[in-house]
Image (cartoon, rainbow, N blue to C red):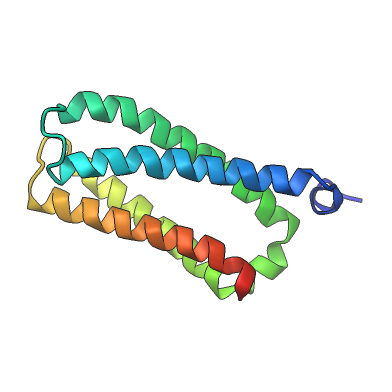
Length: 141
């Protein structure tokens, strides 16, 4: 029995991994949402740079936890997930979210809270919502 078989057969392992995955997503999306709302003009009393210094490490830690737990869940049922349309769409959306974040930072979006930065914040929120929906949808397709 491989370690990945053990993940599926142990009564607590896979549910614990799912809980870690959801906690990682909550950290990632929660901290990202606060910063994106600031980009959109909410909480103008909060300077964007200190808020970003607080939010970005939480966002990255949440992404790391979600990616690690998601990778282990994927490894335990790779063939089924690769054939699942919702999973494939989720992976594509994750790439889009990463590209959007990279472009935001590459153009100095933190210092330029302009229309482009606001559009990227809205896109980010919509893409992460779609990622969450696809993640839940995986079980039903």
